[in-house]
Image 1 (cartoon, rainbow over the protein chains, first blue to last red):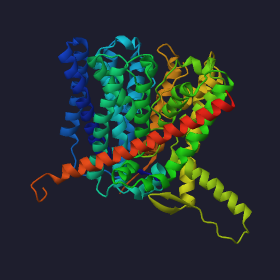
Image 2 (image 1 turned 90 degrees about the vertical axis):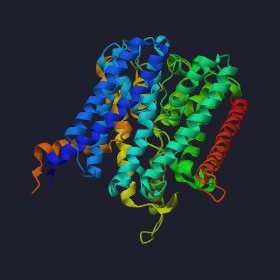
Image 3 (image 1 turned 135 degrees about the vertical axis):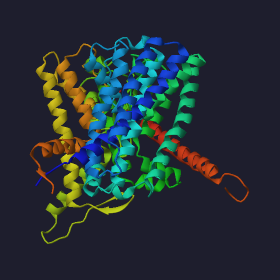
Image 4 (image 1 turned 180 degrees about the vertical axis):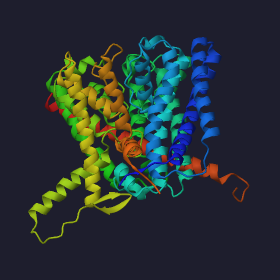
Length: 504
Length: 47
């Protein structure tokens, strides 16, 4: 029986949504200061309007909806789903006012792409955007990327039993630290440490590539946010290909990998326990899939005569594979080359990598290595059961923080979400085909990229693309980032608003 | 504060961060080296 949410429930959700919107206004203050310092007056006015709107909404909810009730996980899920939706709409205000987008939908798409750390872009004339506006785009990656981890961990901390299984596949006991505040602090410490080290390394690499110090630091900061938060926005239209630099690409590969591994494993490394990392199911799944897919990418590129030599295979093949698996989505070649020069095998491997994605409890998107690992274990478990006598007890274990027994409810939850991802990939691909002008390689590539929050593009996503398809990709990014669960909770909530029984 | 009057929390953080980043860098270099070996071998066999 569905219970209809009361006014108190809606008030609670509105109150916390207001806090998220207030946080968004702070994100706009940073580029506003940059715009003021650089005399970018148009951008400054766009940020002031956007920040004032968000601050106004935030202050209104604080004043009118303040409550002492705490969030239950159901409230939390609905708030999360709405936060990414309203967040994208409000974050699009400065982007729309910048005049670099054809319409409001394109600006909302860009904001959703930033907040979901996807990196697909429909901006016009990126190379001549105000610096403050570009910094804002990259800050959206940081806000959305760190935000999703904190939000999911806080929901689990709130004690949602089944939600932990759906999101982390049994890893809910693997809270990084027992206290949520300490966990959040650790996550920000890791991010801050990599910000300093990563930006410095990129800065040096850019100087080596011939950049002036001023341009070097600007590009280094933006590239860091794009790589470590596995977003993929770039300061230049040509993405990573603009730099033509092996040293820049090398640093970016390391940062993308750092962003794709879970904060739980970062914690083990910081604690000096690399054995835990090497035994972890996700590490082993990612190591296996990366190796196999890299062999396929190299084989495809060599057989097609696309590239020759180890350096080209690493700079093009490995970089693109890491960009796909980590879900950063940086490109070292024009999107059209996947179609015209890469043959069939290598792009297929890249699509598979995009579908798999990185680790749970990281900013990476996709199905996640945890779910792929558990699904593989489930398949092997079923095969073993078939081969054993009926009376035999078959037990399958895996290592996630500690040795765990594979349970039926875990397997079911994992395969359900995996199936939802696959169905969404296919729906996006079919919708793309319905517009004509694209083939299945293009539409599947782009659909997987949007749903898995990757950002690699084969050329379908551009400012002039059909608006219906743009809207579909926007929804796919939202669904993929929230891994369906929060959106289903929102739908359930809306249904119960209309059809639920009033609680007594 | 530690017994010498220093801020032990900061020192602990620096030690942990150095260890964590160094271990991660080792893993990342390992990934690139394995990829280089695979690419070289395939380049010889297929290229």
